[in-house]
Length: 416
Length: 221
Image (cartoon, rainbow over all chains, first blue to last red; front, side, top):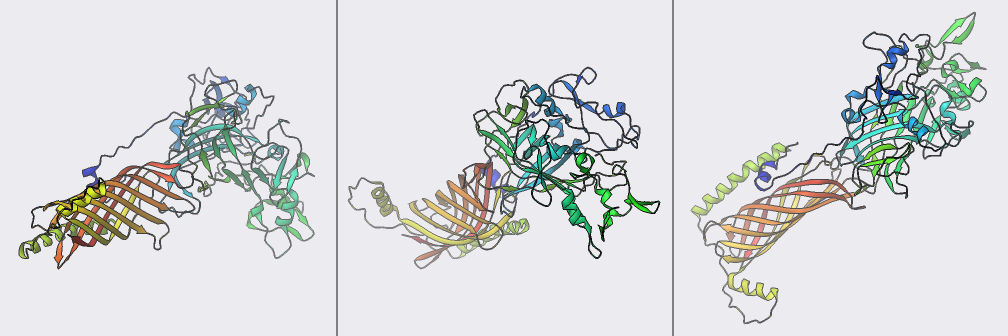
């Protein structure tokens, strides 16, 4: 508790009571890993040619989800017991988050699993390496246009999004699992898991602008959501990265921004919660190339590509090529030496608006955050939303999470 | 900032001690009650009752300016203390040579420069007591409502809650007027800090603290 200059005289007159409340935002069903039934997300990772950990070691990093099933969870890129490498990373160790104790180990793929059970005629399962965790304690959120000298809301944030940036998946698929924990000094608190519908299925927004139709989504009946997935495409990169002599390549375009827009709504349409964090990845290992095999282009390959006098020029390509038989060839996209591996990420914490002033804190929604009610139902996900109305009539500006971190090294490589 | 406030607080007792010495060495008659005869008014109103009381016991009014430091503390508040000028006015009745009651209002306006505007206001029912009929030192306590408004960005947040005020001062009589330096501490707690756009509360535990030094012109009739 902070002490102020007026505390002493005021104590003569007032007795302040600070009420502290504890909550248990997620419910972990009892059970042990040994007996738990594996969810579809469990056990799907297999080592690549340079990964030294076995699946058995990988599968030791597991947790029991609210449904009693066994899920993979965060692990470091290097197993601390054996020193073997997994070749991928899941971002920041969530155990340092102030919200970790309440959140427990994050079950990767729980919302996907619930979608199977929801009876909505949809299945959506994501790969293992795309689960990315980020968090920060005691971040400062300001009201729009504010200086923060008078009003400052402090928050703890713990987020996990499945944001794979190595395959064609996100070119068409807009459904990605999002786990979102936030607790703020203005009583804003939510612990939410859902399938975030990011933009429209079957398409994405090019980093250079415009919408690109990339095919059919999985599932084909994926609902549309707000926001979009901004992903680089070949035409964009060719013009920005392959440049004539005397110019420098703009590798800033090799950047993905997934701008989410999420709601928890009751069946009658009342919006209990709205939050719209943006997830950005720098130097992913893929771009959209309709002419390429599997419609996936590899940025590292651009380092060896010359069209007329145009080629990639910049330090990013240092060490990304070899000369074989007199020809310049790039290293493999999944080589641990490649800097195009998606280990640089950041999250923009934006609005977190709750409209649950008189409501209960525990709701059960379908995997998309819809049809929330106070009792569980098939395929429902337990959501915690604090009983507050925190719409102040203006937007808020949150800080960037993770922008100064790099999760590379230790054998991490694409696919990551 | 805290050091300055501490210095202000440390000066306050010195000021009061000096006032007491002045009182002892230059004893002047305490502001006298009026001697206007009570009119035979049958007007059954509160105003008439106050007038009768005033005629019998004397009225008291003061208008002052000052400077003070204020801080709003809450779970969503930055803990900055800022200084600004204040104004205040008091109107009351002398119930006895040693005891006065009245109403006081003040405004503290931190609106000149800075990154955020802050305005504190308060209105109190006050009771003032002198040690003796000839004493010039007084202590005054008040209970009322205080508000604090913060304009930091595109929205204003305002809290309004019950408040207490404690004043210590000295009446320095010069002819028909009295110059009254005083120090006042104001506190309130448990306020809801609400958006002026939606009425939603960003904090339910807003606590206001304000310490101001003022100099007033007072009239006693």
